[in-house]
Length: 152
Image (tube, rainbow, N blue to C red; front, side, top):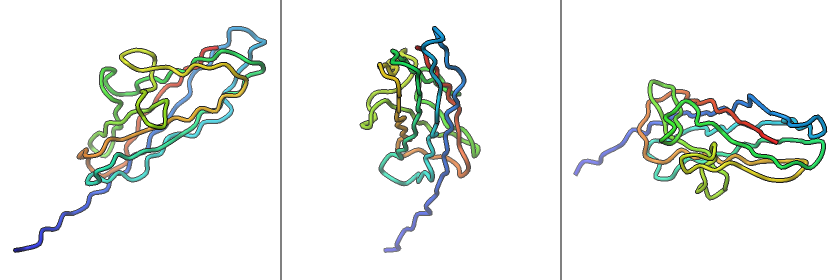
């Protein structure tokens, strides 16, 4: 019996979250984005049986306690499917979540997604990302650009 060897192909996937708009309803409720840590998935192994997880963070500071809603766009993919990282001559499906268990898709509140809502002066919001296992993609750098909208 001849041993069979499999070449291991590693894929690089990096996602950037772009903040484009924060809208104030009154001057006394001034809020600003104080920091953004984008998701960086690192190396994706097409042969790994486990998904590749990452975590970023969005921090918003307000002058007084406000009710805040944060939505995240679908990015460059089809709004009815998971989000898509593109590059390297291919694509990788992924999504972003509100919870560490990665069960609640963070979106715009449509198509089964939910928005973050809360009341505070300082919001330090983790963004949980996941690329599911078992995707075949070519080697290269992959990215997507998401728009985060903050309404208060």
